[in-house]
Image: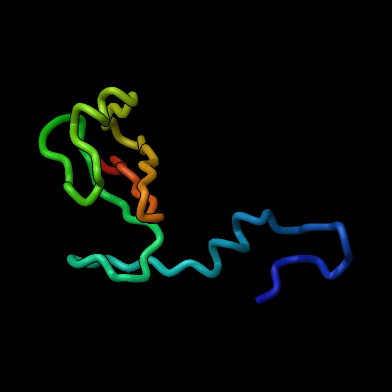
Amino acid sequence: MNTSNSSPGIRLTPPSIEVSLGLRVVAATVVPDDVTIIGSFAAADGAVDERLGVDRAQLDLNGFTGTVGTSMLVTSLDGVARVAQRSVA
């Protein structure tokens, strides 16, 4: 599917939409080897998924409140981005 205009220099669709068309989202209990980003749900308090790579104190220190609709990108040395997110109440 081509979402861009064929005329040079004119974009009809923002690049973020073009990129998202090629994404594959999978829910899994084991992290696949070819993954480039991991999303972990994190509430305002309590335990934090160890796959996120940070603990509750680090989330708090970086201003992650865990309120509905919030997220925080966690970078890592292994090249896999991790996202702490709270999307539902």
